[in-house]
Image (cartoon, rainbow, N blue to C red; front, side):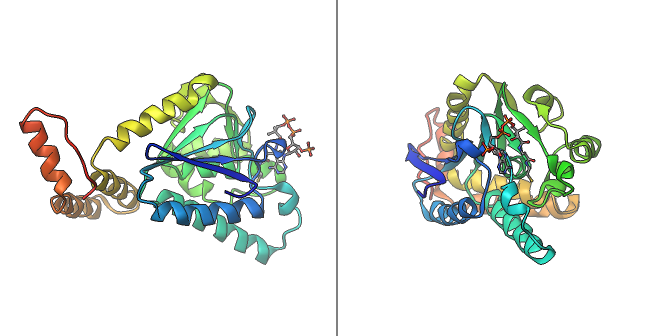
Length: 259
Ligand code: COA
């Protein structure tokens, strides 16, 4: 890809690796530009079924927005940057392909917010997660105040954001930020095995299930249930729904075509 992000594609998986290890993979403007372009390409690429995010080096996933750049912002530029980061992370959340954050070290500020916009988060034992913006006299600006409070209990979100303290991966597991904690050397294997399980399923069903959860969370229960019924109905327009149900009844493994 560009110089700040490495990208590779194999067996239906798109692997995005933030690659500024000497700056703990902090998200500078250039990296955001590269990420935005890459996400557009991934969206159009039918061969990619699941996207994994991780960080280069053994120390960091992403240690936040680039503080050198933040230090030079005025209010209007800061608002524009916040809206841009939010838009890019919403692109990730609504990519129509499941996304997994393989958190291999520090996931702070924008790095935590990036992970929060993914469908699933798996952390290595050495990972440290937090929203330290208040320590800089700032607040999270790439969706953290909203997504963290929706993902975990409000009190835990408040504590993380108001103290600015990092938590260990075990604590992140306990309060529900991450799904699983594994040794660093097993992280990519575990994440890829989750990706492969998702890839084996009906692609349209996977996409619509994510949409039902993501969109439904922002609706009343009543409207969310209608959304679910509509998307459930839509599944029956696919060949894959016929294949999946027939294969079960015929006691064979389904072959989904994504149609
Ligand atoms: N923006 C810009 N540079 C960053 C950065 C960030 N968010 N996070 C780390 N870096 C840089 C450091 O300035 C340092 O650069 P240098 O070698 O040119 O001095 C390099 O990455 C390594 O970081 P360092 O602080 O030396 O590593 P450490 O192991 O001592 O500490 C952290 C690790 C994560 C605790 C510390 O780097 C940190 O607090 N980073 C900022 C996290 C943050 O506030 N993020 C939210 C931003 S809104």
